[in-house]
Image 1 (cartoon, rainbow, N blue to C red):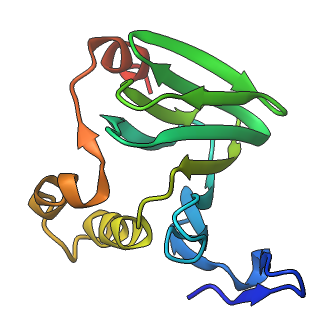
Image 2: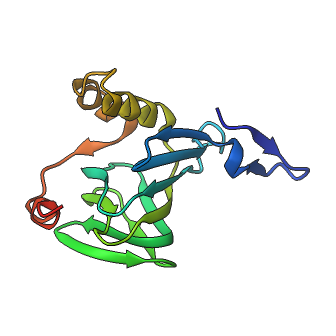
Length: 166
């Protein structure tokens, strides 16, 4: 669990070293702050992917926007029917309802700060996803939890074409 330290003014400090870590050597997620921690303002996590590694499959959120700030490397992202590349320092905002996905470009790692606003309780989603990836949970649980986590999976021919070579 993340150690959350309120500052003297009521702010929230989550130190990188104290954030809950999930994932593997290819794909790691640091959980910083969930909706319950931020009064519903946002959910925040940091995702690091090795070159060519998939992040999230195509999906959309009905009630939240998702922003991606590329801290390092290069991120391939689906936005609607377009596949773009975001480089270090780039900012991408995906509004509610727009299908999106992300992965590291094949020739570069990606280190990305991801913020969902307004916040949704997402830490349990990432924990479930981690268990599915490790084979200790059934992928059907992800499908059954789409409403709970405001994470609705979609098909994307554009994303499939862009990622089929990796």
